[in-house]
Image 1 (cartoon, rainbow, N blue to C red):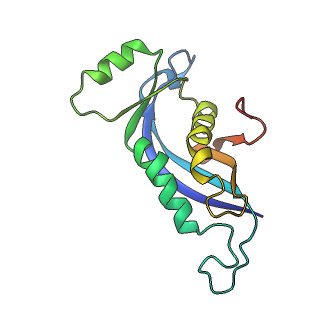
Image 2 (image 1 turned 90 degrees about the vertical axis):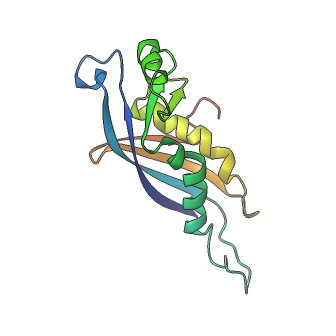
Length: 152
């Protein structure tokens, strides 16, 4: 069985080598969909009976490990040294330094990498992160799927 939880957050970024507007500093209202796969729990009397995972637990873990970290932060590639230097000069600025250019594709893959160990077999029902879908805009998104990423 697969289940999905959607959350939203705001972040800034830039794509330094882009040939159009995305090379400039800007922000997005991102949405992230976290899809988990696992067996339905069948334990009479358990508050989890009939579930793969409680949707509120999916939200809590995603917020703690990703959403609260990226929300209202500037996501910057380690190689964008001029921007990184500028952001580091701002006292108390919320900056997340990434090992990749913060495109929708790379952010989806980074989110998958961060969340994969968080959900792994949480309830003993063979739970696994199956997919992360990251919306950069309502019309543009990237999917990071198990089996298609370099760590698989």
